[in-house]
Length: 312
Image (cartoon, rainbow, N blue to C red; front, side, top):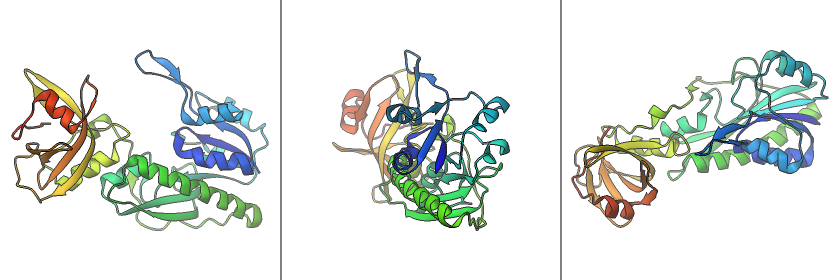
């Protein structure tokens, strides 16, 4: 089967690997290179890097305009597959393949339609999520369901571990769906359940509100660890400094409670901080402009002690 792939991040890499072996991957459509880092060098995304290593043709249109649409009409496309591309495909592109255009979406659609389904599932403390393979329509994440699989969210899972799990399930499901399509054609079912929307995250979403219960703060840290990252502030002499929290553990109400944001105990491996209800143990953090620290390094470097308060 001739397949044209639309995608950008590494969530789709396991699927690309399988497609490259079992089908004719005629190209990878991905975002243009972006300037990044202190030197503002042009950087390629994961999909482009993978395609370049494998010798797969790469397309990086600035816009999915008429010129690009007319160009891909000249390709012999049986199926379009979209995974984490970041843009909505117009109807003119969706209708080009001989068979269909399909999308692998990391949620149990119609729940968590939108740009950040894994992040919001973690932030909201869901016990399960999953992958749904759908036919594509001009309306984002509204297509018919071709396959769906539930995946349990464990207490220790974060955005990285869930992306890893779901990416491999996605690859297996896509291959099975393509095989089924080749044998018996398309049999999509309507989405069933109450829809919800997983909007794109912003930098402000990372700010910790210490008045919240500890489990909600821990869920936030787990869900946005990749970007934007959970953060708070601390007073260092006369300067308010930004502090990013990388790793923490929900303790609940096991310890004596201090004021929200207050350090209530310090051990070698963690700093325990009071929340609106319960507390969390911070294990790894980074002060603005400094290197990432384990808890004991932070304590030694900034000479904090119980009673010190993180703030909004």
